Length: 397
Image (tube, rainbow, N blue to C red):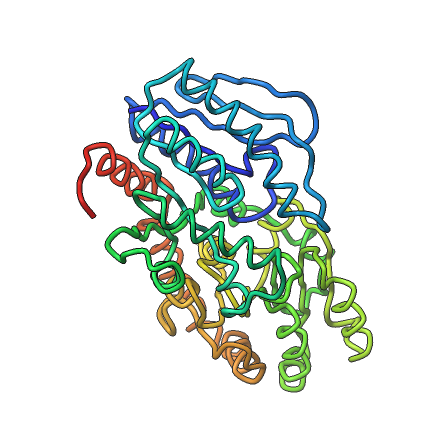
């Protein structure tokens, strides 16, 4: 089987969950399909175009200009012809291919043109939707254009893959894609690196973030409205009023970073709430392990890979019951879920973990076992390969 994959993010260019997904899925696909040949076409924003062959994996990097925030959509649109040209050369040089797999809307213009030109089936993984991110609102011309691109992709695809039932319902509701045509395949996690950290003495690392007597409430993510870090800051005084020996550690950068820093200062919480800024992967993983509870109060979350990582680390989790998070975390079984955008509910759940450590440890142990058995990348790869096989053989939805 020969697959052409189009993705906007691929190592070393990783910006978020989409890039991490492709990074982990790619080798797992190759491990689980000895007959698979995989060609990845991806933009590179610095340096020249290149071709790299690693066994049955070929990565074709296409030199393009980095999109700017002011003209992001039009810049993305302008780069897709370069992806079409590069992918067309790959198809002619290495084909025939069985299908195209495209990740999200950014390279979807190229994917749909290639689908038409070469008559190839199209599998589309839709990682999130513009309309879902803003609760059905499309706030400007660019937002409406992105929504239209997502809709066109969902309509054109032979199969759509989403990471949760919530996302399946979004795609069906927004773009009228038949439910049977939308396959739910969750994100995966390689928990080995986190389990290795659990066996190490991280006390010196921990002391960089909190005093020995302080328990750590950890959150990490892009500083944007939908991730809800502001809700955690607002919940902090409620938690601290009953449990003083707590340090809130919030990692990540983004548009809301400065406003959040100002809010923390205004609330006189600077000694209790630490904004770390950018965290390396190693720093983030260590914080998962040393934290007493990991909290993800998202307003919108198609899946929630950060919750999965915390669960793999064996750390108790608290999440808002939205999107995929409500599926990943089973309330009072593998973690605690809270009412969305409810600061009091959030504070209650954090206190439940901090004041009931034995029950929290039991939930965390169940979560870690579930993730290791059911959400490892080999399981996810096998589910994805089955979609490929169904499309290749023309199995009806």
